[in-house]
Image 1 (cartoon, rainbow, N blue to C red):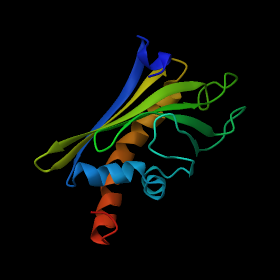
Image 2 (image 1 turned 135 degrees about the vertical axis):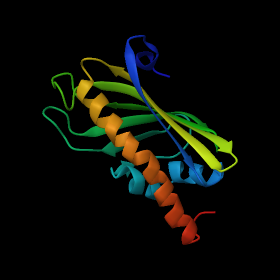
Image 3 (image 1 turned 30 degrees about the vertical axis):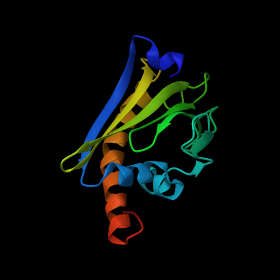
Amino acid sequence: MNDVALKSGTQEIVVEEVLPHAPETIWKALTTGELINRWLRMPLIGFEAVEGRHFTFQTTPAGMWDGVIHCQVLEAKPNERLAYAWKGGHEGNAGYGSRLDTVVTWTLFKVDSGTRLRLVHSGFVLPRNDVAFTNMGAGWKRVVPSIGDVVAEQVSSKKLH
């Protein structure tokens, strides 16, 4: 974990969804570059589910920020937990594109009906990250269910099992 995510006074986004697929199948969707691109809809460069691995996402630039989100895998326990640092923004920006130093954690729990997928995006410093917290809170609520849609498409075409 990074220091910001552990500080009191920070906020987190939590989204949970039960998906009708095995944890191994959901894990593939969380750790396969092509599938991540489909459910997150941001270009991904250099991802591998290996602790210490650095990778980036590209989103819309703003002000002095180039739109690159710098990430590093903090934990990768296959079929159970994936955590990565999520850093972006610029000190010179206010609102969208302000400095962001957070952690995204995916936890998979086997349940009778498939997998309970829990996302926690932690470390939002308010008020500095108000815009990111609001926008990403709404965004993650759309993204998490779309992982199930991507998996269902893959399963039906027999690309995942």
